[in-house]
Image (cartoon, rainbow, N blue to C red; front, side, top):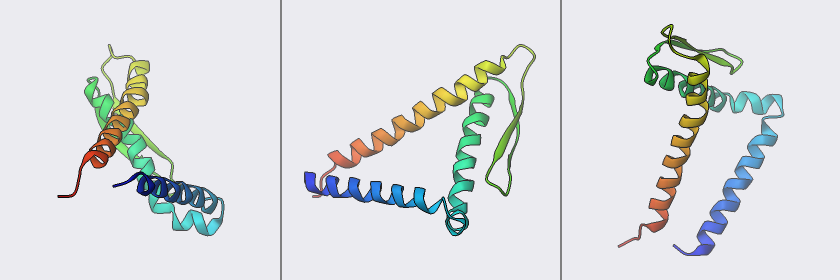
Length: 114
């Protein structure tokens, strides 16, 4: 794949991102994009729940409300620090997702058709 393909793909993705941001500002757009809001909330809250489990807490439940907000509830041992879980959830999970995203794009760019 040549460089012009990636340039046009990047322009298309930026256009879609910009259009979705504009669409989200309208009431029809919020209804149309609501499934993506719920999915983004699920990913965000799991970014708190999974690190909570990895740090020794018990992940009780994940609640997603109709307005798109959510909460991840966990029970932590007395010795565990709440700040530690928050830092793990915010920093580590975002870094892991970014690394996976980057590795998939690099793999896609370096693959060739036979």
